[in-house]
Image (cartoon, rainbow, N blue to C red; front, side, top):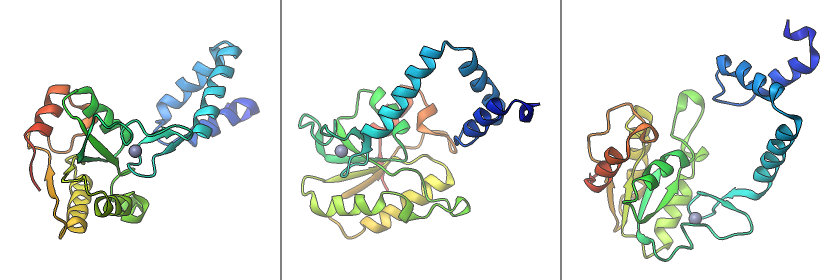
Length: 201
Ligand SMILES: [Zn+2]
C-alpha cells in the first residue's frame, strides 16, 4: 500500500534510516507527523537542524556541548577533576547525574567494542581518554562505569589494559547492577550505590 502513496513511502524510508526506531514504532512515528499541525512539525524540523549544526562532542570529555560555549563539565571548577567516570553514552551519564551523588567529571566513549557490529576501539574515544589521562595531572582515579554486559566488560578490560602503567587508580562499579543491564534503566539509588561502593578494577 505504502508504495502507492509516494510521499508516505518517502517519509517511511527516511524514518527507517534512523537507528533504534523499531519497525513497529516506525508507523506510529509516521502517524504522529501526519496528524500533528504543520507548524509543530516545522518547529521540530528547525530544532533538529539547529541541534545538528550547533551541538558537538567536547574535545576533552566527548560529552555533547554547544560549539560556541564551554563544556558544562570541563569548565565547571566546582566539580572534582581528579575523578573521571567513563560511560558508554550520554544516556548513562544522565542516569549518574540523576543520583546527584557524583561530583567528578566524565568521559563518554560513544559505545562499546563490538566486533560483530564492526565497532573496534578506534571507533570509540578510547585514545582521547588515554591522552587525557596522560596530560591532565589533576586526574587521580578513573571509574570504568561501562554497562555490565559482555561488550561493556570487555571494553572496560581493554581500557584498563591501556591505562596500565599510569599512576592512577582504576576502579569499576560495585556488583549489584544486574548482569546484562544498562545503567540507563536502573533506579537512582542502585546507580548511586554502585558508584559509591566502587571497587578496584
Ligand atoms: Zn568536556
